[in-house]
Image (cartoon, rainbow, N blue to C red; front, top):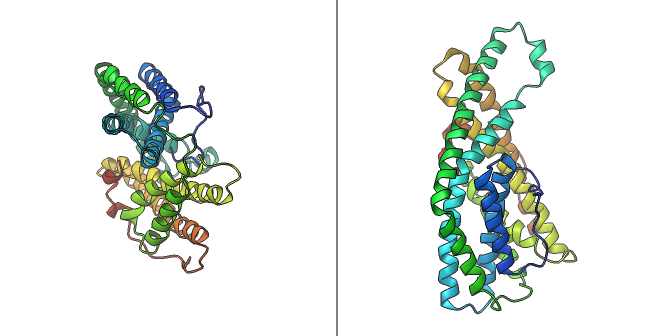
Length: 312
């Protein structure tokens, strides 16, 4: 989900691991998720995969790696992307179900118990919930079936990378140059940020966060980058999740009871879109130390005009 912090898994990764240990731990997470794809494990594996991809890219750029190791890393990257693609529908259904469960609080529902609009909204929520549960179950079965046929090859690719990088990676990679490059990209992109560009902006901030979190705690600049990138990731992720739920609910628009729910979801998504845009500007201003970003509310087009499928 788009929580400010990634979940602490039951087997959190010990610090100071080499690449062989890191990728073996990733294989363990993959096996656990294939055996029982709970919401926690699906999100944890997805986040761990993104982290490893970012770290691996940065490590390869700062080490004299043999061509065979680079090719092995590219093969694992392709398989890791497929794993994330398998996880995405399960993760998205989990996010939508969690948001739908908290959309109305019980007191508000009780106060509007006699309202026809409230009854329509509740019926639409039940229909949407059943639909999301069916989609989640179908995606879960598809993921398990695919992993059963590909898991050995995926793990073999991961282990090959670990073996190829033995002795090739520097003990401590200096991420400062990469972080400053990301900061420059974020501050430049923030000046012309649109809803369509938010997903790419969030991905860049996520990469910056992962790299910053691997810098020493004494590096105050890296810690500030991590804080601001996390704020961007949280705000844009929250909007993306609500927008995804809005899209899933759009199938009910033809039903009378779906219109009230769709209107409420639309309003929430648009509010979160404005908040996400403002947070991106604030974070860019904080990272650049320049007061050149106007933080006034800017007009945005309806969330329905943004194709959420591009963000999946």
